[in-house]
View: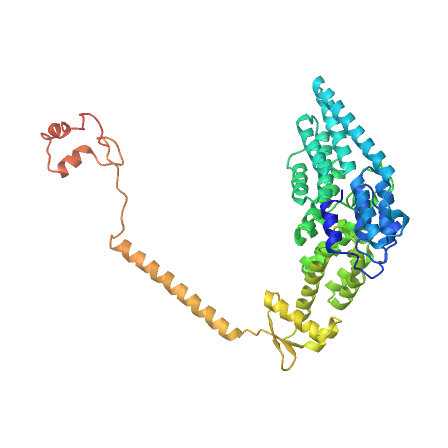
Length: 482
C-alpha cells in the first residue's frame, strides 16, 4: 500500500523538473543504504522528467530486494502512469504473493518467540524479542507497529547501551515516518545532562545530524544551521560502503547532505559576520564543506558581497536540490530568504539605487525586481521606498538632528521628575511626615519595646489600677500583652 506522503506527492506534483541534474543517479544512490534508497529513488522518479523512468525502475529493483510490498506496488503504479508499455510496469504477482506469505510467517514466528520469552521472564530475551520484532516491522513498512515494539523495549533495558540502541531505532523509524517531534524527543533523551553513554563520541555526530534534520524539516532554519555546523567531523571518514562501520549514518543522511543542508540554512539565517566566523572558520564544519566545494564558494561569495555570483551558484544546483528527499519542499523558501538577505546587504551602503542597476546586479528583469522589492517592503524585510517616477529605491532617511533633540528633551524630563521626587522625599523626612514602624509591646525588663507600666501611666492608670486593668476579661496577671 502506498504511503500517505508519497501518494500525496505523486497526486499533487507529477514529474515537473525538466532540467537534467548534475549528479549521476547510480553514483548518487550508492551513498545511501536502507529504506531511504527507495524513498529517494521514488521522489526522483515522480519529480524529474529526464530521470523518471530510470529512477522508478531502480526503485522497483530496490523494493524487490526487501519485503515492503506496499512500496513495490507504489513504484510499479508510478511507472505505469508514465510508461504503460514498459515490462516493469506490470506487477509481479507471484513475487507479491510469495513475499506476503513470508512476511506473515516471519511475523507469526517472532510474535510466538516473544510470548515464550515473556513466559520465561528473562528481561534480556524479552528486550531482544521486541528489538527483532520492531526491526521486522520496519523492514516490511509497518512503521506504527515498529515504533510500538521499540518503545516497549524501554522496560527491559538494563544497560546504557540498551538505551542507546532503543533510542537510535526510534529515531530512524521516526525519520521514515516524518514524525519530527518524535525525532527531537528521542535525541533529547540521549542528550540528558549527566548521562554516561557508551562511545559517546560516535553518538554525537548522529544525534547532531538527526536533530538538525528534524529542525530543517520543521522550518527552523537558524537552529538547524547551528546543529549542522557543530556536527562532529568524524562522520566524514566513515566508509559508506561498509555496513559494519559504526561512524556511517547513511541510512538517514550522508556527510555531503550535512554540508549542503548546513550551508543553505546558514546562508538563509546568519549574518555575513557569523558566516565567516561560525561557518568558514569553523574547523569542524570545514571537513564537510570540502565535500561540496560549490557550497563553500557560495558562502565565500556572500561574505565578500559578491551576491550575484553566490546566487548563480545556487541557481545552477537548484534542479539537484529539488530532487533531494529532505530539501525539496523547503528549497524555494530557503532560496527566497537568501535572496532577500542579499538584496538587504547590497542596499545598505546606498541612500538610493536605480531599479535597473538592482536588476542587473541580481541578474533579473526590472519588473521582476520591482515586484520582489514591493513584497519585501510589505513584509517589513526592507526599510525603503520605491520611487516609480524616477525608478529608484530610496532608503528611509532619519533626521539625526531632530532625533537628537527628541532624546535630549526626553532625558531632561526624566531627570527633572527624578530630582523632584528626591527633593519631595527629603522635605518629608525633615518635617517628620514619614510613617515610622511601631515598636512591639513587651514585659518589664525586656529591651527594645514599651513596658506595660509605661503604657498604664500614659493611659492614666497608676499602680493601684494595674490590678483592675489586668483583671479585665481576656488579660491575665503576669502575662504579656500581645
